[in-house]
Amino acid sequence: MRRPLVAGNWKMYKNAQQAGELARAIVAQVGQGRGAVDVVVCPPFTSLQAVGEALAGTGIALGAQNMHWENEGAFTGEVSPEMILTTGCTYVILGHSERRQYFAETDEQVNRKLKAALRAGLAPIVCVGETLEQREAGRIEDVVLGQVQAALQGLSEAELLKIALAYEPVWAIGTGRTATPAQAEEVHSLIRSCLRQHYGAGVADALRLQYGGSVKPENAAELFAQQNIDGGLIGGAALKADSFAAIVKAAC
Image (cartoon, rainbow, N blue to C red; front, side, top):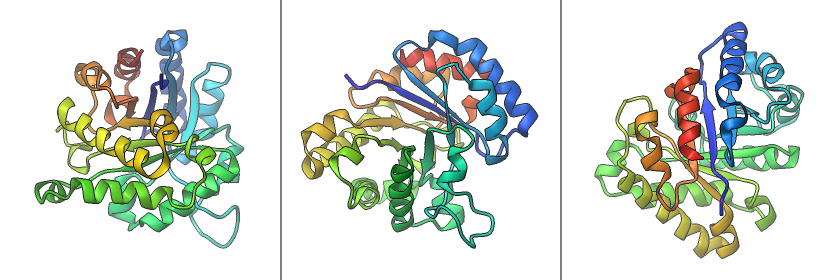
């Protein structure tokens, strides 16, 4: 049995004070009621310290939204895995579609970041997904599985078992449109089959696959009930404690 993973991606919202307040509200609502679910919140870099303090001792993990692959150097504006670790982070989101779309992040860069995160002892959540144009052109398998294989290139089986993959159809992120449970399950099944073919049954059966893209309390339970969906990477609904707590409960 794969333990569900529900992570909240707060994107570029909440200053440090607001983030601390939201984290405390999530702790109050999720608390010990998360059952057999791993819960992570991923605030902006400037709020990691405040949120980490609010989460201390709760069992809810802290994650960053991005990182550089070098530990230090002349990389103005970047944050290293070692810096992230000092805030108490144990997770990091990599390859989010917004990073790919707005900051020209490539599969090669995602792979370098992934290897650096694993070396640092962070648990990566690696995002993959197709655009609406790619979906309508019938390129779902080509695009998504291509991103999966490029991201995981050169990793050992032991390293692969420390990763979660988040399927986020780009056309469903922040749009209010959600893939139907059947559509989401179809792609998750393709990813699981790809993992089995290229990395073996042990990896395929153990690696957690999340769904992301306008997940809400109203649709979470049906999405999470699918055979190959092991939780979610939550955007807008993670910015309110009650809705995030409801989504966590749906994964229990």
